Length: 208
Image (cartoon, rainbow, N blue to C red):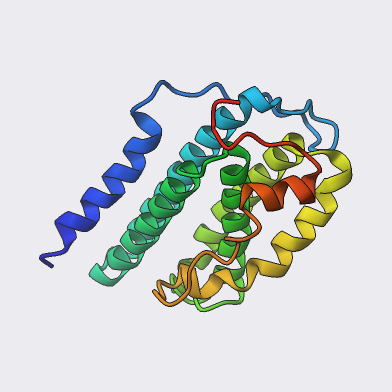
């Protein structure tokens, strides 16, 4: 258990990445993702910070619920691993040179996480309490999709969604902690690739 303090430190750093700066203003979400007001480029960084905060909050709440339902050392190890992976993904997304790329990346991971826990290597991670996790994952995926839909051109969203869904299964090994598998969206998330896919001119910096 010598590594536990270091792991907890990593989680704290991930949570701090969203908490150190002032709480971002979350772009207003309309009742229908299809008709919500677009997120302007100047607000995409705030949307990314907000989604990161929501992801870590939802994962932490789900982990606490599972720990209360099954208060064992094995459960705590599994929930800690999930918290750490979420912190890593948020830090990775927020380190992108472009906030839109980071937002799309977090959406991808919510989709990949659902695959991981429904049909992938994580489908039995929390046993009888898996439903507590899936409910949070479904909420996160829907929230992330609405944000991305509002941040990209309408006519380009469907193609982007197809690519996200096609790559979701490839994220299972990465989410399982296999060090041989890196981010499967690496090439798509390069600014030049996104510019072609979305037909947008993107700044390489988060300050648009």
